[in-house]
Structures are given as structure tokens and as C-alpha cells.
Length: 107
Image (cartoon, rainbow, N blue to C red; front, side):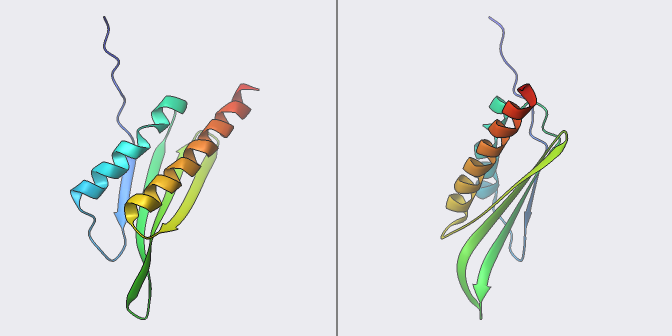
């Protein structure tokens, strides 16, 4: 039986004004792997993590995800209490966009 080799994600993670730990980066990579199921031609994925703070008080964690596929750039931004929640919701939005984009290409 032939083993299916998963291709590595062209992923860049940027954390603004803090250092993301390896656990968070691994979580992001794991969540974004599901994109390989819907599109094999992803050129680049950029994830930007930011803290939303006002007068020194951190309110929300922001995750921005930008996915470059041939002919289109897909974008999602989510603000939640934790980075994990922000990433999950942003990935769900990106998956919906990728599916929609791939359906349009098939038509």
C-alpha cells in the first residue's frame, strides 16, 4: 500500500510585540493543514498574531490569515479572548473561502 506524503505548508508566522511559543506555532500549523485537503496549489500562507490593547490593558488576541493561491489572495481576521480561538475561527473562514474559490475554478 502506498503512503500518501503530505506536502509542507508554505507558512510564515509573525507575532507582533510578543514572542509566540512553539506550542502556539504548532497549533497554527496543525489547523492550517486542513487547507491541503481542498487546495494543493497554495503559494504562501501568512499568519499575523497581534494583541489588541488599550491603555496597557490587553483586550483581545487578533489572528490574521492571508492565503495566496493562483489568481487570488484570501484573507480572514478574527478577534477572540485567546489566540487559539482566534486562529480556529480565522481558519474556518479561510477554509470556506478556499472551498468557494475552488468551486468557481471548476465551473
